[in-house]
Amino acid sequence: MYFLNGDRIYIKPESGCASVDDQLINCFEQLQKINSGKLIFKLNFFAEVSSKENYKKLQSQLQRLVAEKFRIPVICALIAQPPLTCRILVEGFYFDSVLWKQEFIQSENGSAMLFKRESARVLIGNAQSDSLSGCRQNAETVFNSFENILNRAGMTFHSVIRQWNYIEHITGFDGDKQRYQEFNNVRAGFYGEHFKPNGFPAATAIGMSRGGVIIEFVALDAAGEISLPLNNPEQVAAHDYSENVLIGSELKRKSTPKFERARYLELFGKKQIFISGTASIRGENTMGIDDPVKQTEITIQNMQRLYSPDILSALTDNSLRPVYGHARVYVKNRKDFAAIKKTFKSYYGNLPVVYIVADICREDLLVEIEGKVILK
Picture 1 (cartoon, rainbow, N blue to C red):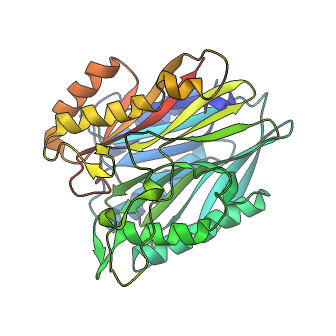
Picture 2: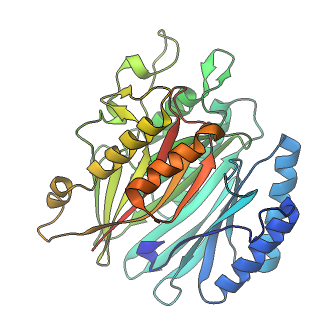
């Protein structure tokens, strides 16, 4: 990652026509070459899986290959979201092992790497539960593991600055309980008052076809850090949504999604903005219904507002030049891929980007985009 003096890379199979096993072997061959010069500590695998049994089989295969191929522990997650340009896609994270020392933390349902440099500590990891009967139960298990990992690193939820929430069938229901709303209710309970002083993490909540609930996170504790929430004036903050956009029984308390539209981080002179999962929402209402091009345009405009000159001028007295670092684009319907890709490219040219099929947190949303902005 950028603030670990490293970055993220995306590995695609060199042959799009090969079998899944052949593509996977090719990805690992590429990873081994990269790892000879950059120390990889985390891998996300994005793939299409046809059943829970298929998911478990591929997950076990990945864990075995990672253990065989890497000399230090590597955090590994299988995210059941099909890439749109290949059968399996690998997202790898590496760091500078000269500047940062690492310590691996293992939990029953998750793992993380704790990085240390001078007084700074950065914790990056994930937790997962997919063995229980519903989203609420899986979310509670994941958040318990998440909290346990934080505590073992001497941190609390207050330290979390970026979070990814992958939720199986995010817009579906367990009985009469909408799954994303149940996740939000659990998240609010665990967060409590932890984020009251300085805002919530930047976050993405996105669907996947299998896997229960996975939470991926970045937490930070450093004396010299600057970490600030950023908001888009044209959007209602998600944590301030009205009851009109929350799904669930009117007789029960419904918690809003607890995240910020973006978050600014400055650490050891490196400045960046985490852009949360962003969609075609103005105020708190979906815009461009049934129009993937319009939704992509509004989504990009919403993101650009978060690193516009008026937002940046409030962060520091120094002049900052924003450089969009990478993007992940979630596409709800495969048929919209070409239109969404063309629209994205008209704004960002050849920016590194990956396109993935995933349900968005509202039924009427067709696209969601996230990324990072480097400030120089």
